[in-house]
Amino acid sequence: MPSTPDPSVAIILVNWNGYAFTADCLRSLRKVDFQKFQVILVDNASKDQEGKKLKAEFPEIELVENTKNLGFAGGNNVGIKTALAAGYPHVMLLNNDTVVEPDFLGIMLQKFRKNPNVGVVQPLIIFLHDRKKIWSAGGKWQQWWCRSITLGDRKYIGDFKVRDRGLDWATGCCMLIRRNALVDTGLLNENYFAYFEDVEWSLRFRKKGYEIELASDAVIYHEAGASSKKKHSEGTLSASVFYYHVRNQFYLVRAKSLGIQILFAAAYHLSRFILWMAYFGLRGRFQKLRAVARGIRDGWTSTLQNTEIWS
Image 1 (cartoon, one colour):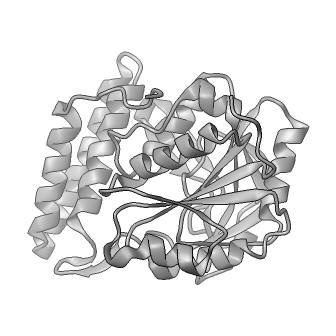
Image 2 (spheres, helix red, strand yellow; image 1 turned 90 degrees about the horizontal axis):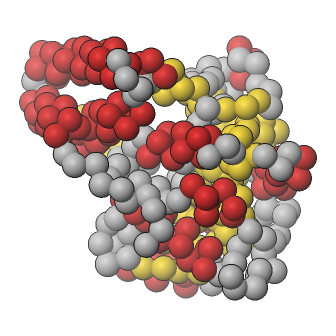
């Protein structure tokens, strides 16, 4: 293994045509009071040489440029491999559409010092433009339904008991991970491309015996879906967002159901998505209707390759 670099955390940001968001995130990271970290910016083949422009504005970052868009999973995997090859003992995934509090990283690292069984830590994530409302306080997994629930979702901070707690899954919006947990568990599954890859990954961490915890005093702010929020003919979110959501939900059902549970989980999610299709049909949003239908088909028929191993 390479010698450990002086910075103890590699923070991976994936940029895809999100220059303004990424620049704001990097500006907030400059104010972090725990200085032993290195930002690895992975540019997913953005237009207009965004990676190089960000490197020019923020020379302290390490830039990795992909020749094509590898999605959230693939882009982060490139960053993870880069970080581990350099010997970093901790790796953080951080969405580029976030802004962080200066003390967030130091608070999250304390979780590892207090409990050697913790492999993954998530901060409290609040909406960037409504700082009284929670975006995520961690995740709960309902095994029988293969259902991932976001704790505190859209609740006002005063109406939800925010506390440090064990989690079933952590959001890929911000995850701090021990090196040994990464090496034992493997990479993100690139079959997912985007959406639910963090849930699948978290469940693998827990299967390997690593605990996942919320550091409730560590706070970041999230724009929420910045890369997918663009004006389309059928609304703000593109049809591809619904396709990946539906397809990957069934990937999870296939990968994580145990025995007869697959019948309950499949029926539950299929009924949900049929209602989505009915709604889109009534609203005349036929691109989204077809995207959901394709997601159902591909979620059940696509081959699930094992892309999470080291390669």
